Each structure stands twice: as C-alpha cells, then as structure tokens.
Image 1: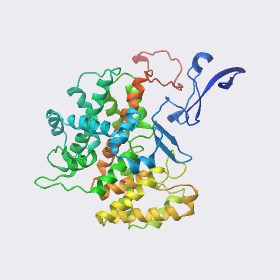
Image 2: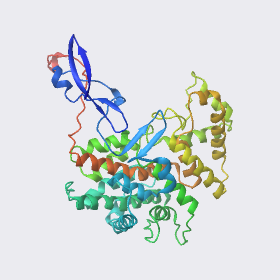
Image 3: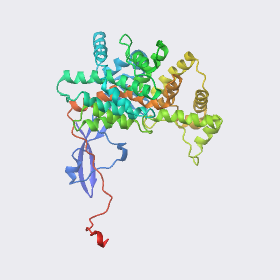
Image 4: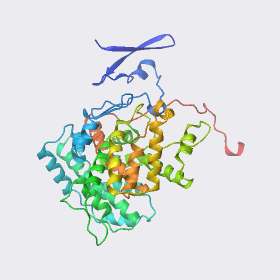
Length: 428
C-alpha cells in the first residue's frame, strides 16, 4: 500500500505521495502541489530539505557516517580499487572487468592529446591567473574544438565524450599548474597509470627525469577516490541543472568547476592551510587557537573540523588520515605548518568540547596536509579536487540526461514592491 502525506491549508486537505528510496529514505513528492493548491509552493533556501532528483549513484548517511558509490562502501573502494575503476563504476554503474578497465584506460589515453591551439589560450592568461579560472576557461574552450553535440541516446557517442574529457582534463589541470609555475607545458607518458601519469605532467622538471613514488601515487589515488562524488552538493547540482537545459557535457562541467571554486565548497582545504599559516605567523600556539574556537564571542573559525552533512566522523577523513601519516613519514617532510596541523588534530581528538560536538577533522583538513606535503601550491588544491570530482560530475550529467529530467526551474516567493504606477522622469 502506497504511503500518503496530508497537508492542510486554510482548512482544505491535500494528499501527496511519499516515495521511498532503496535505503529506506522517505520523501514527500510535491511535484503536483502547486497545481493541486492553485499556486502554493514550498520554500527551502539552500534546498536543505528538498530532493532535486532521484539518483542511483551515491548514498550518503550523515548521521551514521556512511558513504557508498553504487552500493560499494568508500572504505572498500579506497583500499582495494584504483581511481579509474571507481570512475568506471560511478559512470556506468558496475565495476569493470580486467578487459573493460584496460580498454577504458587505453581509450582515455588515445584522447589525451589537447589541440595545440589550446596552448595559445593559456598564453593569453597572466602568470598570476588562478588555476581554477584557467581550468574553467580551458574546459569551456574544449567545446570550440569539439563542436558536435552529443547524442545522449547513442551509447557510442556518450562513451566517446566521456573518455575524451577523462583524457584531456588531467592535461588541462597539470597545464594550469605549470602555467603558474613557469614550467613548459608537458604531456605525460602512456606507459604510466592514470594517476602516476598526472603526477608526471605536474612535476616533471625541464631536463630532469621524473621519478615515480608509489606511496605518493597511492595517497593521491585515495584522495581522488574520496572526492569522486558526494551526492547532490553545490557543484554537482550545478552540473545537473545546467545540463538539464540540454547543455553539453563540457559546458556543464565548466559550470561545476566554477561552483566548486567557492570557498564554502571546494576551497575548504585551501582555507585550512591559510588558517594554519595565520596561526604560524602568530607564534604557532595551538592551545590559544583551540580556546578561540570555543569562544562564541571570538570571530575565529576552526577550518577543516566538522562537516555540514556528517554529524559523526567523516568516513573519508578516517581513510585519508592514514594516508597523510604515511606520506609525511615517507617523504620526511619538515614543515612548521604541518606540525601545527598535527597539534590541532591532537587537541581536537582529546578535548571534550570538540569530541562531544563531534567536531572531528574532516577530509578537507587531511587533504590540504597531503597536498602541501607533496609540494602542491595552495592555489592548486581546488583544481585537484575538481580532478577527483570529474567522474562524479560525468556520472550525474549522464544519469540526468538518460532519465530525460525536465529543465531545472526553481520557484520563489516574491517579497518586493507591489504594483507601482510609472512616473515620468521630470516628475520624480
């Protein structure tokens, strides 16, 4: 028997269906509310209580600290899979066989070449340009070099568009970094894995050999997997709503990049490092800043602790904390900023104020630490996030288009002036 919610407005009752997800999530279906009530809508700033779609990609339970991609726990995937396996899973729904994964990687490598004219676009940016601005612009520019629209009803065309962007995006991300660093633009090495190849494109110095470090490769693999999707967050919702106008994949992804750029979203790990640097400049006293964080009258905010969705420990943070410890030990990094981070972590995990409120270090806290240890500049943290989130954006765009979801068009409650008669300029 289907479940029904009843809403009463001015004494009149309206029945609305309740839908249930595969993990027993319940939602009131209000699609017909406006028609039934003669124009009444709901209002939910930030959409904190509103589901914008039904999706089979990612399940997140913030209260229990659960994150699963297509039913697979994030813990299993981070431990046992590589980034391309997870990308395939998110986009196509199942983990690939050995042959499928090999073909997927080969097809991606075949599409990794970026038109030489793109370098002219990069040359037009000042060296000081933020890498996220460069990356967003270059992703949009791909449309000009690939003008044909994708027929979403053709599996072949859809697949080709997917491997094309998975091949080119790491190149564009690395080039955004190398532009700022003043290095020549570098193509990778097809003999390397997807993640190792990206690291080579990032860090190979002119006239020097690139040396692969498996601990670094494994840590970045984990980071990218942990960032690959996270349900209907700001940037993912942006990709879906832009795509709902039948905008193409590359344009929709560029919109997602711009949404991710915001400091409240993808810029959080950058904010962590900037906070640590400010603490260092003030003498590095972690106890002082933990006390400031507890003082409600103090404007100081402790970045990288707690999470908007997770009301317990961020499951991704548990995984990446181990990787962070391994990277710091393997690289032998001595950095006062990282020492301050360790001090804050220790204080938070032992202080009852933070423990009782479940303000644990989150994935942004540890990812910033790893990126800094790898020598990745702060401005590149968000582009690295975008590289990880790319498969999730693709999967969400593909799902939305295949489901033929209607164009996004939120309502509003108007609170401006009522009708006013126009007055000529000489009488105002």
